[in-house]
Amino acid sequence: MRLKLIQGFGAVAFGVKDNGFSFFLLIFYNQVLGMDAALVSVALLIALLVDAVVDPILGNLSDRTYTRWGRRLPWLYAAPIPLAFCWVLLWSPPSGEAPSFAGLLGIAIAVRLLLSACEVPSISLVPEITADYDERTTLFRYRAMGGWIGGLGMMVLAYTVFMPGAEGLLQQDGYFVFGIFGAVLMAASVIGSALGQHKLVARLPATKPAPFTIKGAFSEITEAFSERAFLIFAVGGLAAYVHQGMTFSITNYLNLFVWQLTRAQLILYPLVLFASVVLMFVMIGPLHRRFGKAKSAGLAMIVGTSIGITPFALLLLGFWPQPGSTASTGLFYGFVLIANSLGTISLVSATSMIAEIVEAFEERTNRRAEGSFYSGNWLVQKCATGAGIFMSGQIISLSQLATDASPGTVPQGVITDLVIYYCGAMLLLAVIAAWWLARFPISREDHEARVNRLAERRMRENRDAVAAAPDAPFAQEGILPAPQK
Image (cartoon, rainbow, N blue to C red; front, side, top):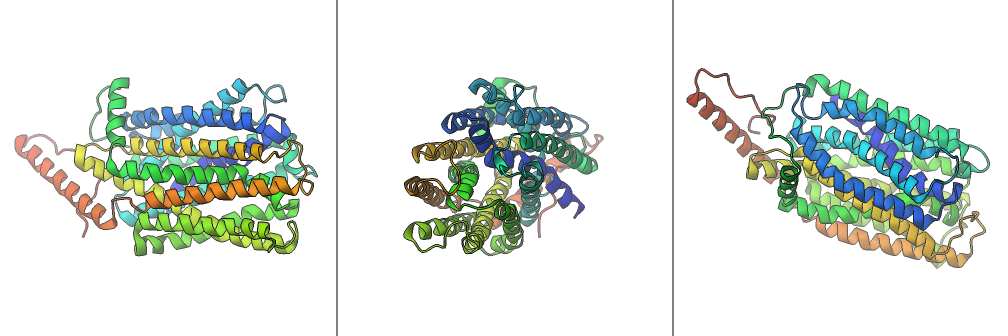
């Protein structure tokens, strides 16, 4: 339990960052600082793409790190403090006014690169710690819980402490405090989690990697990303993460202008999301035991999206209470509870599936590459999230929502266009994601058989090493456990 909680705490930093970028950054730079929504979304998309390209290099460097503290811990101690300073700068431009396009782009890239230097090594520890199919899911659901607690905690504080006035999310001063608090929390999360796992993972790696070269790094990255299971995951994950990125980045627009939620009603929103994550936490284990990770991911994605867009369809058809009323808000939150729970199940299942690719790759190449695969996951996620934010910006622009719009005064034609564009894109992405994720080729049985084969191969290699040099010390024991029963 201590390890689960420490792993979960390490994901709080990612939750803070993801919540800030997905829920607040677009509306802050667009509605508060006055930058064009389409321009902001382009800057965030470029930042994500740059980060995504650099991520595999960070993952490869993490895999190659060779210290007495292991491969991951040096990164987790070095990156958090610079990340905290950049996070503050993102929410408090030096002039107090909207920065230039290049200024926003530069600080967004810095934040994302530093966050990757924390998150890729942190999440790569999971398949190193255990090879068990279900234990990996358990650690990932604790990480998911930690990430959501970090993100939703910041959302609650934004609504109630940092921006509590009549202007709510549209007041600039609150975002400065939002940035300061988030920076401290992110640094404490990463460093605290690393310290908590130090004794468990701080050891010299079993083999010393070759010196780093750009050519060698890209060769290893290309080899890892050519793994069939990873390619199938990447297609489904791409659509799933675009789906998530668009949902998060447009949520505040939908809540304010479509559902016309009051400040008191908005405060309940993160609580509903947290309840949905608790529901995920309870449901995901039985679903994986019944259907496996791949089918659970696909089924949850398509069912969750169908439930999530139902309120919008009923609203357009005239079968929904008046937006802003207690009945409307209560019904809407009920749908959000189920839809977000299923969506989170899909994404946590997909993240856990990557851990099984590690052993498939090791069996083929005799090399472990956790950092490369999870940086590949971030490459897919960040490209997709950037595309989702970009799509949100274009949907807002196409619907002709004014930059100074007020809830309750937006023309019905604008609301209709906004809803139709959003729901159509969400349904299409969900179908693509479900189709590919359900076809992931590694089942529980495949994974357990592979772990046994790898353990047996490792024991044979140790016996051969002893036979060849009987006076030499035993080869360092590997990470994988003995064959499973």
